Length: 249
Image (cartoon, rainbow, N blue to C red; front, side):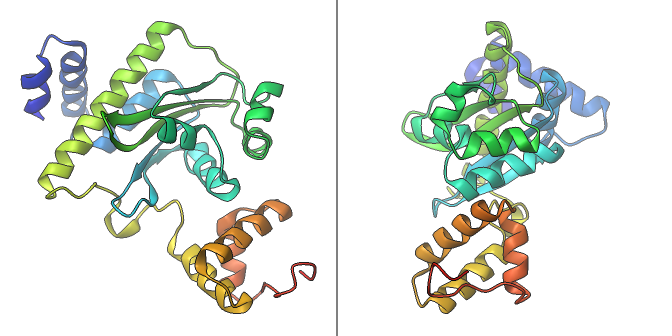
């Protein structure tokens, strides 16, 4: 990680952050890693959870790191309903700063995501894209259980954490020969192996393609008010099946 110090300078804001986080890792007897930086970000900004979503070479989003129940729950909700601030931050390569998910404005922007996120306990979400030029690697999201409007200085510092995570991910990517780093063996996939298996089973039951089957799976989870992972478990265990007739569930 000396490249950060060399390229931006030890006295630059990013360089100083790298030095501070490195020192903190040493004090705690921890290895300096992307996951550790995300933990420090969660502590620093007092959130109810954080999540780091990375996008692999196949375009599949994976949860590289998460803290707190919201850190896992919110990305899953986004996958289920197909909308949300994390996805917007990635697609637009621009921060998504949502101070209160319970407002009418948030409901208009994400009519499916916002009420489910509030029900799960999230009231504010700040998604920072990990991007440089046209290269987009993922999103670092900070989640809060109460509405909060952070000061500009806090947002600038959060952006520095995102820049540090991006630099570390790109360093891993170079070391891995150009492959975008993700969870080892899908350790933290947004769509886990059981969901993949359930999608295949639904595709067979409906005699359709995997994309359509996954869309039906997401729609069923949303309609039933259930987690995608819970519904998938029932399908794999053959407690639930899909009928070709959409009116006969």
